[in-house]
Image (cartoon, rainbow, N blue to C red; front, top):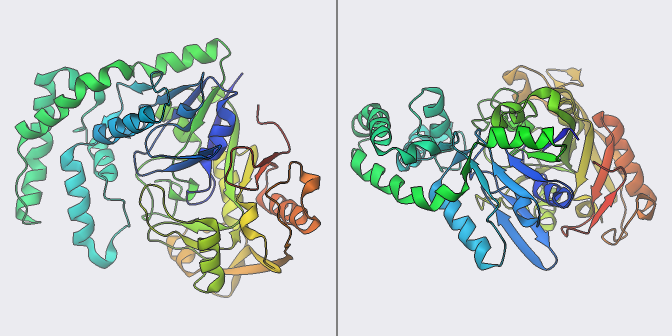
Amino acid sequence: MPALVLLGAQWGDEGKGKATDLLGGSVDYVVRYQGGNNAGHTVVVGDQKYALHLLPSGILSPGCTPVIGNGVVVDPSVLLSELSGLNERGVDTSKLLISGNAHIITPYNVTVDKVTERFLGKRKIGTTGRGIGPTYADKINRVGIRVQDLYDESILHQKVEAALDVKNQVLTKLYNRRAIAADQVVEELLGYAEQIRPYVADTVLVLNQALDEDKVVLFEGGQGTLLDIDHGTYPFVTSSNPTAGGACTGAGVGPTRIGRVIGILKAYTTRVGAGPFPTELFDEDGEALRRIGGERGVTTGRDRRCGWFDAVIARYATRVNGLTDFFLTKLDVLTGWEQIPVCVAYEIDGRRVEELPYSQTDFHHAKPVYETLPGWSEDITQAKSFSDLPKNAQNYVKALEEMSGAPISAIGVGPGRDETIEINSFL
């Protein structure tokens, strides 16, 4: 069975955790391949709600092996805290595997993230302040600390000192902050080493051997397509590649292994943090979407910006990721609107544009061109098949499918694990 990639097709927060969890019982491995604890997933199992920040959603599925790949950046304190919280709730976390090549978020990465964002003022990017960006910057600058470095104190000390040579100059002379002592950082990091050791593995070898044995491997992206460092709304993006190509580099599998790419779409659109958002609403409808949809960041606690569905973005996600399917989430949130606008194109300087402009300037100036679809008032949370949906809800889904360029194979009609309509199997 080829590998599957499951990722966000908007700006993140589309409901990837629920989708991954639904597939978790049918797959052997669930792999996080990028991001860090800046990407939260909410999974509802029965009457239990789980907020996952760094761990793959598959950790909640018995029999599934959760994997943190080499493309992820790991904050050891967050990881251990999250594991402890799940263990206290009776969740077995013993199968977790962590790549020895994953990079560590150090205390100085967090410090640099926070002071830099504060220094930018009105020009801030809207980071979570958790050290994600600086850690990826260290990785690219080849001064990063990897999980495997925790097991060689001499190398760890050398690498921390090398990283702090420049950072302390910046902290003291530019930001007027205290220098950070290398010994103190090394001591803290070494304190995590033995606690993490049981999970550390050569995950590239494990995953490729699993695929050789016809195991089902699901790659789970954090954030979303429009937050991709290369293909998102730069510079208001994350520091890694949530798009499908990121699964190959972030987990160490070849592209020929991947047979299906599933994009998660919310039935409307949300965004956290700064940056352009053409369909954003500043009225009662926007507030209603936020309230009914519970639109607050799992990890950040920030209110999400809300707007109508943007088909231009959906088409772009289909193209960039090579999407084979969509999972449409939160359709139930739209119940009660008599008319539902959908963005089908943009107007930019008097021109109608139907594809996402590559120019940052054009996208900042893009105004949505709407088509309005009839809404519905019936409760859809008990729907078990597509035919159970009100006719207008069916037509809304069909319209989104046609505009987005890939079939909608599942629909979320409520937050629960069982509140999903499966049209076509993903496996």
